[in-house]
Length: 76
Image (cartoon, rainbow, N blue to C red; front, side, top):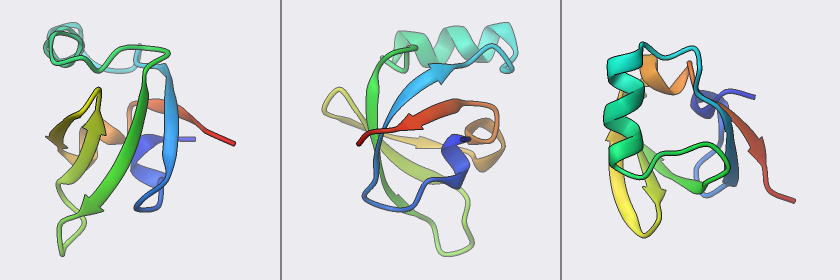
């Protein structure tokens, strides 16, 4: 499942980020967005872009275009 498909309040674990361009992937990794890291989709902007994601206790805003390239697994 893609990060952009998550519903608000749902916890998930990042499984793959290889679809992102290398420079973008590196910037996200510096902010703590890494494979096997848990995150939670907090909310979406009124028009659906950007998304607010909580990662390692820090809220990060991601463009929907980036979120569509990040694979996640919903936590059970």
